[in-house]
Each structure stands twice: as structure tokens, then as C-alpha cells.
Amino acid sequence: MPIIRSPAVTPHKPHRVLITGAAGSVGGQLRAELQGVYPILRLSDRIDIEPRPGVEEFVKADVTDPAGLERACAGVDGLVHLGGIPIERQWEDIRAVNIDGVHNLFEAARRQGVRRVVFASSHHVIGFYPRSRRIGVEVVPRPDTRYGVSKAFGEALGAFYADKFGLGVLSIRIGNVAPRPVDHRRLSNWISPTDFAQLVRIGLEHPDLGYEVVYGVSGNTRGWWDNEAAFRLGYRPRSNAEDHAADVLADHPVDPSGPIAKRYMGGEFAALDYAGDYTSSGGLTQEPE
Image (tube, rainbow, N blue to C red; front, top):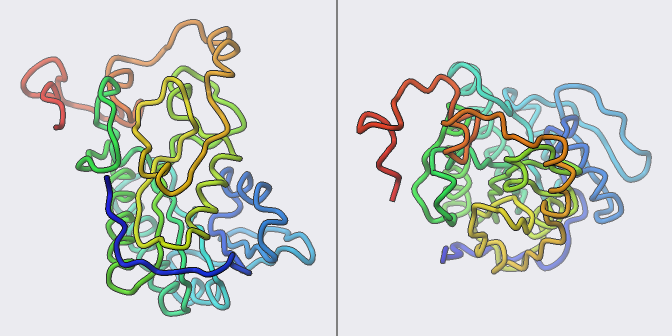
């Protein structure tokens, strides 16, 4: 079981919560779920967003601009970092946004006195584990892409800022946030917007959070992950992808994924540019322990 370290106590709910990447799909869903939960939601993105008067405000910022991030973090009690590149790209792009950018974000939070950070990590941190193996958060990362590598870095950086500077940090290894699962794979890794918002609130409000990693997944019957770390923090998922299984399987009677995508948790991300032979000793036949 993961150990909570460097506890940073938050005696009450945050007043002003910053959501970076608020213009994206996940940001929009979270924004709707958190309406009325906190007095002020501060939205930030590199593109303009129209805030709701009286309950939202907008600060334009890019993660590659440290000064802009400091402005976005000023006066904030809690931060949800959703910004960044959400897909595979060339290393130079990933490094600038998802590695240097997340360092800029944590440093801005530290300098501005933000006490809580929820970091949107990804299940692609462990994308090369086989679906046949049920794993918890204690396993060694096996990223499936440069994108997955960047999220593993973000998790490590979050641990550093928690242990070194006393921030409370929750890294959520997100599966797929959507109103409903839409294919075979998402019957295992889906999380409803309501359940995702519950995890975010745990990260912002739990009284004894130091640094933790959890899986961002609903209580899915076909799930791959042991989410005991989340349950220990009080997570009680309300959704189950199995409630949508009949519709998904009616729309997609056969899973069209190739053998690599079907084998590994990362799906098509694991299959992308794969040049090994998973059926021989030159591939990944020796599953990570």
C-alpha cells in the first residue's frame, strides 16, 4: 500500500481553484461538475474562454510561459493541471509542453503559495503492462509513448514538490473521461465525469494528503487496475462501464484493435511505431514484474 508522505493539512475547502487546460474536453466536463462546489473557478488556457459571471474568471496563459503561469496561480488555493499535449508527438514538442511546461506549472504554484495540486497523469505511464495482469500504483512505470514518459516525469515532479516543499499533490492516472464508454477498451478504463470530479475533490480537500497516485477509473466490472490507493483516500465510484456494455457491444460486436493494442493497457498508443516482436524474446514476452 502506498505511503502518504510529507502531510500538508488543508483545514477547509479551497475558495479559488485554478483549472489549466480548461478549454479542452476534460476541462469542460470538470468545469460543469464543479459548478457551485467552490466559490470561484479560475479557468486558464492558451485560447480564450468565456467565464460565467460571478462564479468563474479567466486568465490566459501558456505552460511554456512561466510569467503567465505565475499570474494564473496568484491568489489560488488549489490547482488542477489538465493543460498539455494529450497525444503522442515528437520529443521536442512533448519536452517543451509536458516536461518543461509542467515544471513551470509546479514552480509557479510553489512561488505563489498554492497548497494543493491535482496533476492529470495518464494510464499511458503503465501502458506496456499486459491487460491480463491486474496492477496497482506501486508498479514500476512502463510508458508506451513519449507522451507516457512525460506523464511519468510529471508524477515524479509532483512527488518532489510534495516532499521537498510541502505541497499536497494527487496524480490521477486517467483512463478515459467521457459521458459514456464508446468501445471495447473503454469498458475497462472509462471514468465518468462525476467520478473524475470526485477524485479531483479528494485531491483538493483531503485533510492529510502529501503525495499520492491513483487511477482515474470508475468502478468498472472489466477494469484492469487495483485502485486501493484511491479507495483508502475515500473514493467511492458511482459509475460502472458495464451499465453501457450492451450498447457498446451492439455498436461494435468485434473489437477491431490489432494484437499489440489488444495485449497492452496502452492500446493503440502501445501499438504506435511498435518495432519489436511480442511473440519472441526480442519483444515483450517477459511481462514486467
